[in-house]
Image (cartoon, rainbow, N blue to C red; front, side, top):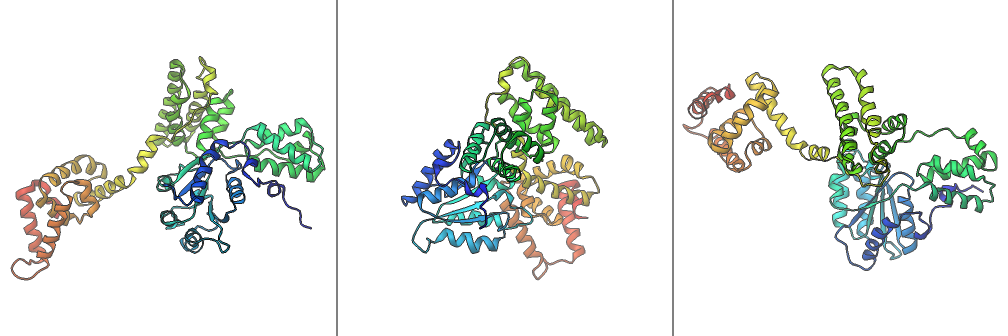
Length: 461
C-alpha cells in the first residue's frame, strides 16, 4: 500500500485545525458566508498572501470541506494560459456543481503568472472575477509585485502571518505522538527553529529524519539535513535587517532576497521611520543609508562594482547597528509598507515611456540628444500645444506623433488638435486645387510654421 506523505496526511480538515491564523479567518469566513447566503459581496474574489508554508492553501481546502463546497483548484504555475483559464476557471465561475453544491474556485500561486510569457492571463482572471457567480480565492507569496496591481484593486486582501516556532513545534510534536515516534525535546526545538515559519518544510524534514533513523534526535537531524537557503519576501528581509544583533546577520539577510541593492535601499528608507522612534537613532540610520546611496551612485558613474560591498555593509549592518538608544524599538512589530517611490514609478511608467518615445522622435529630427529634447524642446512644444491647436496639429503631422504623445503635450487641447489633424489629412488627400504634391505640401507647411511657429520649421525637414 502506498504511504501518504505526512504533509498531506496531516493537512487541516476543518478551520479549527488551521494553526495561528485567527486574524485571517476573521476576515475570510464572513466573506465566504455572504456567498453562501446568496448575497454577492462587493469584492468577488479574495487574495490570500503570506510566506510559503503558513497555511494559505490548507485554509481554503478546510473551508471547502467544512462548508460542503466543491473545490475547483488551479495552480497558476501550471495553468496560466488564457485558454486554460477560459476552459476551467471561467466555466467553474459561472456554474454550480453537478450535485448542486456551491463551488469555490482556487487559483494557487497567482504571482507565478508572467507578464510577458503569459500574455492575457491576468486580464482573463480580472474578466472572470467581474462576472463570477461563485467565490474565487487566489494565493500569492508576494502580492506587491507591480504586475498584480490591477488585481489588488478588485480583490479582498487577506494577510497570513509567518508561523511562530512555538506553533510549529506543537504541530510536529502531535505528529510524533500520532505516529508513535520517539522524539527529543531539543530535536523538536531545533527542527522548529530550522523551519523558520514554514510548517510544510518542517513536516517534510521531520518525516525525512524519522524515515532515515526511525526516531527524532538532534544528532540525526544534523547528520541528515543540510542548512536550507531560504529566500524571503521584502517585508521579512527589512525586518531581519532591523532586528539583527550582529553585522553578519544583517548582511546575510540582504543575500536572502531577489531585491536589487537599489530596491532594498528604497524598502529600508520607506520603513525605517516606522520602526525607529528615537531621533538620534533615526539620524544615525539615515546617515548610513545615505552613504550607501552615494556608493550606489558612484557604481553607476564609474562602473566599479567593487564598491557594492561597502554599499551593502552600510545599508544593512550600518543601519541595524546605528540603533543604540532605543534597542527595544528594533523588535516591536510594525506593519511595513511598499515603497511609495516604487509605486509612483510603476504608475507613471506608461507616461514616462510616451515621453521617451517623443524625445526620440524629436532628437532624430533635430539631430540632438534625447536629454536635450526633454529639457529644451518638449517644454516649448507644450506651450504651443496648449495655446495654438492649429500649429500643434501641423507639427503633429510633420512629426507623425501618436495620440498618446499629443495628450502628453496637451490634455486640454488634445481632442481639438486630433480633429484638426484629421481635417488637414482629409483635405490633403482630396481632389482639386487644395491637393498638393509632396514637395509643395512640405514647402507650404514650412511657410505656415515659419509664420506662426518660428524655428519649429526644422520639424518639417
